Amino acid sequence: MRFSPILLTAAALLAALAVIVASSALIQPNRPLLLEASLSLARLTPNADGIDDVTEIRYALSRTARLSITFTKTDGTRFAFREDVPRTAGTYRVLFSGVVNGFSLPGEQLGGIVERRLMPDGEYTWEIRAEDVQTGAVMSQSGTLILADGTATLPDIQSFEVSPPIFTPNQDGYDDRISINLYLAAPARLTVYLEGADGVRYYIAERFEGRLPDEGGARFFDYDGGVDNNITPPPDGTYRLVALAEDRVGQRVRREGSVAIKASGLPNAEIVAQSSGRTVTWTTLPYDEAYYTDAHTQGKTVAPPIGVQSTMAQIAMPQGDLLVFRLTVLNYGTTPIRTIGPWPGTVYQYDQTDAAMMTPENRDAISGAWRVGVQCERSESSYPWRWALGAPEALTRVERDGEVLWYLQPNQQVTVWGAVRMTRLIPTRNPQKCFAALIHEDVAIPPRQNRVGEIDVRLLPRTSP
Image (cartoon, rainbow, N blue to C red; front, side):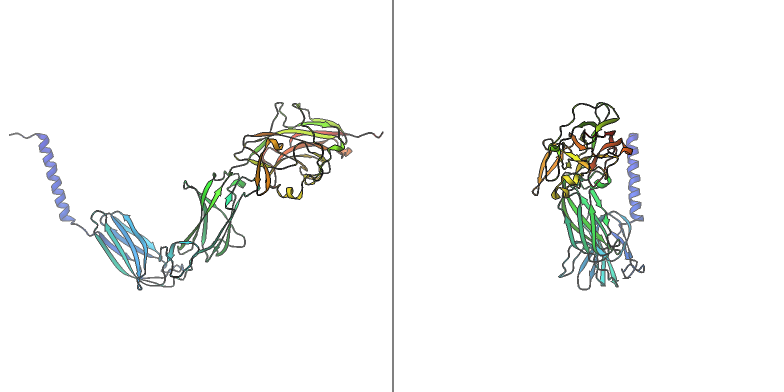
């Protein structure tokens, strides 16, 4: 009787496997689940002096298990360092400084949530417990540990104030930043961040005003969303605001709040070139007293110049007449930009500034607004004559706490025009150059938006009758 070569080969392999299994059982019989458990020190002084501040916990597992490391005080109070964490077979080492999962003491009132805390001084029974994930069998080893000189105060976040709760990081001058005031009960390193629903974190830098880093007491954070550094701010949405305080022994306290972000974006705008290549159209008009305007008098306005100007470099005009301009502004940013008057068409006297056109209430609202400014070389201040970006009918009206605000929407462009009465003639400085700019009030003149449409203006003296 002949056997198939394949069957013979299979039988030989099975026999070899049986021999290997039997040999393994003889050489390495079933081992205990917890092969080793020990602490390197019997007495721990967790005071960050560099001496006996930490002990090494060492344990070894023969099989996959769920592991717990706990400490029980003589009064029965139990503290967990590890609680039912999965571990595969192998040898493990971890440093322990007396800091365990967060807890609070009886009658204690805390401002934050304790995540990690130093156990009180005293005598403890430590236990390393392993539960086999397959069979449920449990094995543990224990010993004694004494804690002494652990005097670190918990760095509780006793105060946590955020203002405003709704944050609009777009540099329009309204709620552009949030202020976060905290008070720490003890010295600690403080980390503050926003976290969105997608889990992305935006860390907030601390402002050290009278305090050194890691000091206790009052701490202050200020956040603009990154806009001041030309960084795209977080998108609109509701965010967790998280503060974490951690001291040098590893105690950690967390406190949370909520912040809503709206109308977020980087503001950007520019003066648009005409088809002729110039950016500003200049012309002149005779002056009439009906044009006179100030904060209390609304004079007649000029109409915008019509047509496209050539590339001429000089205008000659009678002294005392109006130098009129027209240009176009485009909002190419990702957020609406706010503007404020005076409105296009307003006529300035040469010695007036925009302050002469504004009521005290309006002056307070200038910061963060965008306007077009005009200046001549002999002007006594920088861009003394300023106008809003477009007429009211071209803008979006927003009412806020009883105040009316005006916005130019993204991808929208508007025409801006106005006039200045040119009365000052200095013979040795005639002609003088005049030019325009796009101004983000109290922020900056954007790149390439300064000294735009420059032209020489020659004043012709009026002859006496």
